[in-house]
Amino acid sequence: MKRLFSALALAFLALMAGCTQIDTGNVGVERTLGNVKPETLAPGVYMTVFKTVDEFTAKEVPLSLADLKPKSRDNLTMTDVDIDVYFKVNPSKMAALYIKYQGDVSEVLKPGSDGSMKKTGDEIVGMGRVLREARESVYRAIARFDATTMHLKREEIAAAVREVLQHELNVTDPGAFEITNVNVRSLVTDPALEASIRERAKVDQEIEAKLKQNDLAKAEAKRLLIEAEGQAAANNAINASITQNLIRMREIAAQEAIAAKAGNTTIVVPYGTQSLLNIK
Image (cartoon, rainbow, N blue to C red; front, side, top):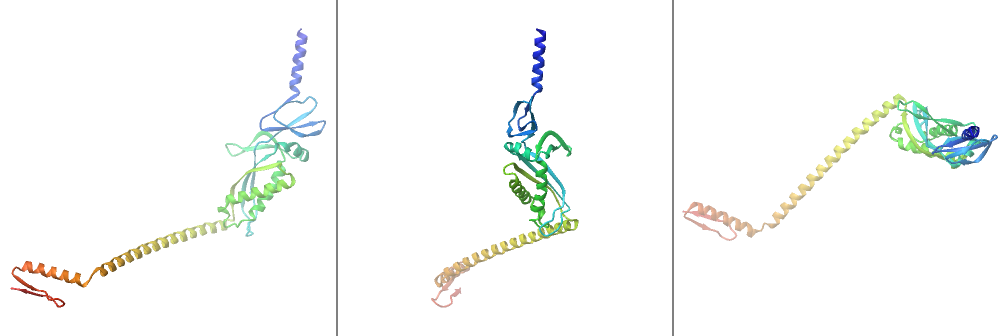
């Protein structure tokens, strides 16, 4: 009985030793006697007594490009360009990529909390292919922009790099790689040009301030003009309301007020002539 139990235990251990597990987010590529099976294996447990299963990640992978020196559209060489590219491999294409790029298998590195790159334990196929194309794409994308205004167009540069890179990868490996994001970390031009850019920014700010002052002055002048036009319209309305009869009535009222203050008076008000006031 003990011998049977021991035999079963050994068989179980041998069985377990001949199994491999593919974790979630990864896929497997099966090899039998050196021949690669074209179908990709999904996450799960597989028997590997007579075959080998290589596990590769299908998760997003960071790719850091540093110390690049591309030329801008105005033919100025950048001092330093640092860009991060993030991409995924289509799980259904993993086996085909493994067959095509068997020598291009890399361990995935990710930045740690201290900024250094740390090993993740995951492997990926075709990273060298993406890296070579990414460098070329950065050079081609940067060539679309002028060095003097490039620092204001990080998002446009990132979009251009992504567009160029995705197109080039699709030409050779349609649907195999997906560029998920591009981040421009650093754009450094020649120090003299950097000083020129800062000076230009200062001048632009001063011009903008002057334009705002001019706009305020124009607004104030417009307000004063509207106010003057309103006052003139009011004066015109008053002038139009004054008639000869109104003037005579005001004169008589004034003369009566004077006579009332003077006491015993005689007031003669001839029509059409100057009024006479006789005070006894």
